[in-house]
Image 1 (cartoon, rainbow, N blue to C red):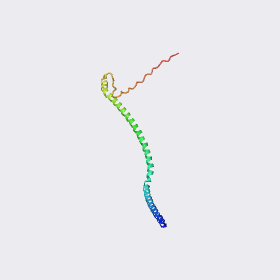
Image 2: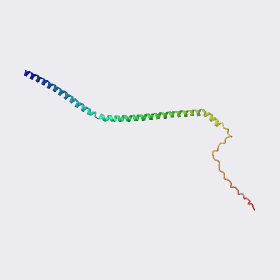
Image 3: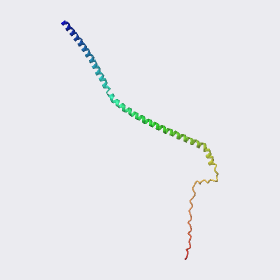
Image 4: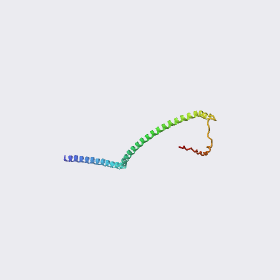
Length: 141
């Protein structure tokens, strides 16, 4: 019986040893895979810095986007004003051209003797003759 108990204990110990060896093997594999993963992740450690840079760039991008939207709105207002003034000018030009004949006839039909046209050369300046001095008689008292 003693022998049987010893055999059972021995068998249990051998199973425990196998179990522990299996567990050591699993932990070694886990440790190796974790070390491998750590080395792979070290390559990506710079991405944390890039994440901060990305967030900064994203913020700058949003500011620039807002600025460009405002600029575009301003451009639209100026373009609308330009088109309005251009159409108004076109209206005035159309009016002028439609009435041009009337004004041409009006100004060409002026009587020839009624309006004096200035000569091509200015008139010669005449010299003034000196005034004669008139002697006054003094009143005697």
